[in-house]
Length: 396
Ligand SMILES: Cc1ncc(COP(=O)(O)O)c(C=O)c1O
Image (cartoon, rainbow, N blue to C red; front, side, top):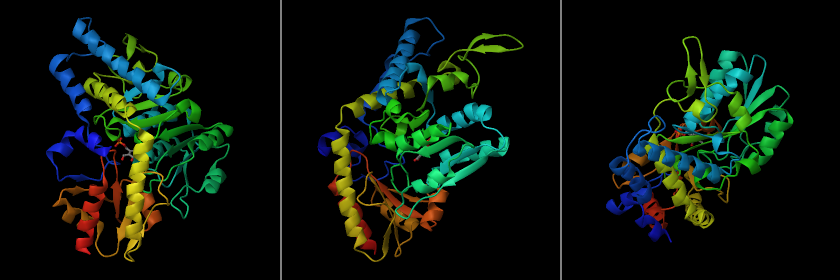
């Protein structure tokens, strides 16, 4: 199965020795995504929305076809609920700025967790500083999963917003989003979900989850960098002020004021990343062709077996809950510092992530200054795992 998949990723064909174990940071790109971008720049390049000539109208049609593909991918109710952004970081900042500054005030609380990526901490920290609200953190339990009892205790009628990741980029843990959204709503809070990690592995149904905002990045689901999505329930988007202002967001401008378009246009100022939007649709089309459930099972089996082998060494500490539910394996070796390991294995073209992994609070929980994270994409196979383990063992 993976051989057919591997053939679709030119980087793996060109660099036959490459062992890419960093898909949680960003995934490699299939040929179909690369071709869609190249085709646009080579054959059909033009701006969108502003012009009436046919190439521009075609580019606009492509952009809107992509929006429809995202709507179906997330099972949003309306296509207008899909906003193109630069990525998850940009999407969360947009909500913190455009929703937060309007609806969150002194004395209110925002509840997040200790396992958040900095992208889902800093925008809230900044907002709280500005408006005088309090940022609260639900703690991580002993098994590297969210402590739901602590989460429930910290939720109150003061909570105006809950922002939480669906899948931890450090421990790979999965949070019960449907339950969390229901709890948030029972206190009148809105719920934003960071889907940066989960969207590559699981099908997302925003209506079923009943979340208010959902964010993800194209580059983590086999699509291009610089493009991402903010899904928001339409009534919430409608009452939000724009985040970035400028061309293509307004119906009428006078010297004293302006009338903005309805969502999504009022949030998409400036010439969009058209090639990115087109590439995102190609990535979604590519994902739809795969049996994602089967691929996830395969990846989990590869990593669970590796974890068993690592666990037999006294010098290794693992930082996941087992059996794994997502293809992330995080560990520490007392015999070799993570940064030294990454530098030495780089010589063999074995790529993986080490360090604080953009989540200092998770690091405090792990009580380490640096960890080793192996994360798999649909192209990884047994040879990749063996190559890592052999190279690692040779250094011990
Ligand atoms: C859980 C999580 N949230 C947010 C982000 C930020 O995504 P981006 O850098 O694409 O904006 C990442 C990236 O690693 C992540 O893992």
